[in-house]
Length: 339
Image (cartoon, rainbow, N blue to C red; front, side, top):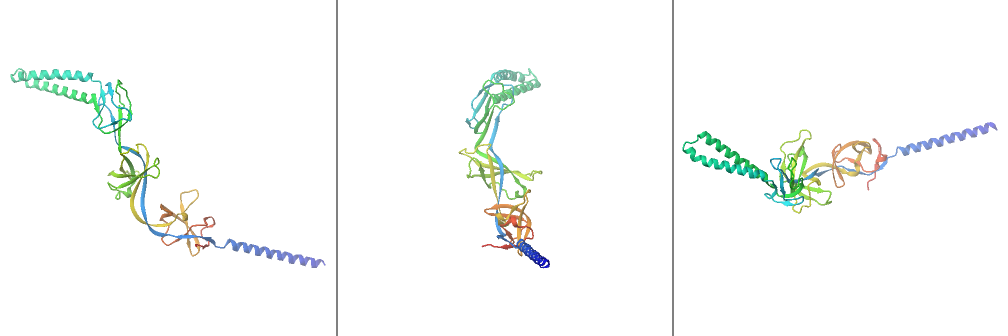
């Protein structure tokens, strides 16, 4: 009886072991089964080269209104912040007391010179004495002319007054009396990568966008190209002029300048195929070959619609996964289920 019981227990244990073994075998089969994925094919396409550079909008021209001499009292400032001026308009007059004294001195010297001319002809004074009188007269004329320029100051440009630093009666010091900007045209300075030096031309159109007018594009043109490159940044300066007759744009606004640098041929894939590696800026894809996933780093370029240009790491015609990235590893068997 005991032998029969022991035999039954042994049979039960063997049955249980066979059952566990079958279960483990089934689980291994599931683990090694192919992962279902969708793929896209890398293809060659023409890529439009558009480069965007950020900068600040600047006035087309600006000028500090400053007398040539210091220590003069301001008689009258004829404009204020926000006023518009034209080139040649009188904007500041300075105290003319010193000018009047110089004019009196000039008249005296001129009179002396005029009286000495006939005396010189008669031999009453030497040539050297007449030359000294003439030099004194010329010096007085120069002083009067210089003081006149400092007494009446005109604007060299047409524009709007953006700063006033003194009041009538103040003693002029080093700070400019006024600051004037021309804003009916504006400019943007962009530092463009050296690879595009042969491409950028004077007269080339450039799209300008500002955050304050979302969705709106202003047209600018390249007006000046710096002939030298910055040795540290490997960039060259480009000046872009923007018409602004309605004065919607203002100096100081943040702007993005978009250059169209032409087209090039590149390898394109769906943007969902390109993944970012956690903790780094590296990008990677899973290339599918003979039913097996291959992990591969790539260098991506610009985005065009729902496509991304792959600059390095992928060849035209290769298939890459677009789904199931969590379950993919290098060497993983896959099953393509594109519908």
